[in-house]
Structures are given as C-alpha cells and as structure tokens.
Image (cartoon, rainbow, N blue to C red; front, side):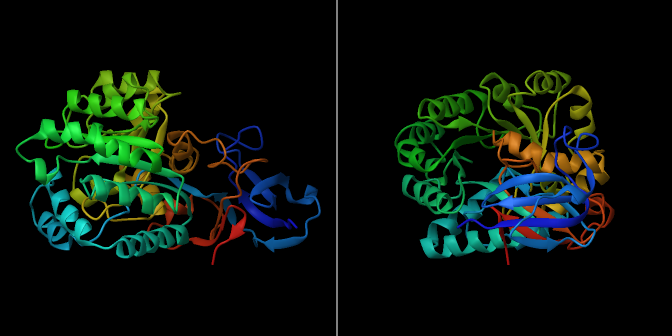
Length: 392
C-alpha cells in the first residue's frame, strides 16, 4: 500500500517550473510538496496542501530538486595523489595520467570496483545528488570495459561506454587497431549495458575522424552520443557533437565564436556540460558559462568525478565554483545542476519538483538555495529523498 508524505513548512521551494512559481526557478515561498510512492503528487502553497498519510516539517528551510550529475567516472581503482601533488607543484595536466588508473582498475576485483563505486555514490547522495551518469574508460580491454559497465548498470540507468577514453597502452603503436576494437568487438560486448557512447576528442586521445567513427558506430548499435569536447585546447569536439546531435558536449573550456554559435543553435539537442571541478583541480582556464548562456546555449553543471583531474563528488562545490569563477548567477548554477543535468541526460522525469516528476529532493539547512554559493564548503544538505524514499 502506497503511503503519501507531505513535506510542509518549506520556506523556499525551487520547482524549476516557471508555471508554478516566480522566475525561471519557479520559486514558491511558504510551500508544501506531497509525495505519493516515487512521484511528486502535488506542489503549491502550504496552506492549500491536501491531506497526506505522513508529514515532514521542513522548518522554514529551502527544498530543491535533487542534483543531476550527468558526467562522472566512478568505476575505477587506485589513487593519483602523487600526480595531484606534483601538478599543484607546477607540472601541467595532460591526458596521459589516465594510464595509471587503467593499470589499477585492471588489477582490481569486481567486488573492489563495486565497493569503490558505492562509496562515491553514498558520498554524492549525502550532498544532494539523486541521479548520476557514470562511464567506463579505465579498463580499455573488451573484458574490463564490459565488467565496468555491468557493475555501473546495477546502480544507475545512466551508463556510458567510454572505451575511447585514451588509446589503450596495449595498442600504443597501433591506434587504428584500437579504434577498430572500440567500434567492433568491444562495442558489441559493452552496448547491452550502456545507454550512451562517449569519446575523449582531444590531442593525446582521439582526433576528429577517429571520434566520428567511434560515435557513429555506437549510434548504429543503439547508443546515444556524448563527447568530451574542447577541454585542453581548441579542437573539433564541439562541432562534432552538434553535427551528430549528441546529448552533450562536455567541458567546453576552449571555444571559438563558431563553437558557441553552434551550441546556441543546437540548444534543444546538445547541452554544454561544464565541469568546473576539472579546472579547479588542474589550475586550468575556466569555461566561460556567461558567454554560453548569453548566446542562448543550454548549460549543465556536473562534477566530472574521477581520480585524476576532478576528484570531487560535490555538486554544491561545483555550483560555488560556477558562481565565483564562471560568472553564473546562483539561480543559473542551481538550474544547470538540476534541470540542466536532466536535459543533458534527455530526461523529463528528474531535475524538477512538479506533479508527475520523480520524487528526488534535497532539503537545505538554509533558508534559500543561494546559500549553496554563499556558504561554499559547508555541508548544507540536511535530508535527501530519492525516488520518494528518504535516504539515511
């Protein structure tokens, strides 16, 4: 028997639906939300809330949609502390550090990989993340890529095949042979576990022609493209993402005017997913979110949680970085970390607090969502509901 729960006395509710409240965030003051099973049943002013079987008093605090982390790399083993320490001492970041994690991941057991994944998922949920995407990419053999996706698929619907993270060390002298593997036997083994196909289109990883071949093969196998694009320098990634109608172009750090225009024109199809944790952790140039938003592009924020270039699972931290260093407003940053992430995953059932949406919610120990940027580093998430169930 389904039990309904009313969350009452909400000081400020972010719905992300302008039809329900004020401004783009659809803000409702003195609000209530009724959960029925795993869905939102009712949203509105607290004094109009219908009766429910149970009640939770928000005590005047802010309630927001659960964060949608649309880009992470959580199936891995090992530690890259030494690399981070050296980088903070002056060494530049390049794609080559991935090989260290590949070696550790191959050596780990399935149980070790799953335990590490779960540790990071629980860590993220405590900070308000209720939906996450995660990728393979640290195995780079048919068996290791397939097991990574199998492990991930047991814990999220949003699984991405990233056999094309870098050219496998086993194929260092034969990159064309590795592309053949990624688009052939490896794809066949991995596609049953994945929804998405991704490629690191970057100098030191895969060029435009290789990336096109990989994404096209993935699409033919029923996977939807995403692209690691324009992180380390200018390149073809963004244009390729738009051309192939990828769900997202991720990083978008180094953009030409033509790249920005392309993302703006494709705003309904390809989301520009910005990953400020990577720039923070590599002391790199910040993505210019203001330029993208003003041009009309759809922007998402995500953690890029991975052991090398962005070892954070905290969406609130990424919101604070986006507001401080990427020229986003607090409202824009929260929207991008919730509804924007949902757009990047082509989901309409998450990222909002609206009737019929999945009941994924985060209660802040603060009167307003602005505190996420106003009080950086403070653990403000005091309660989380995932699919209607309060997490403990």
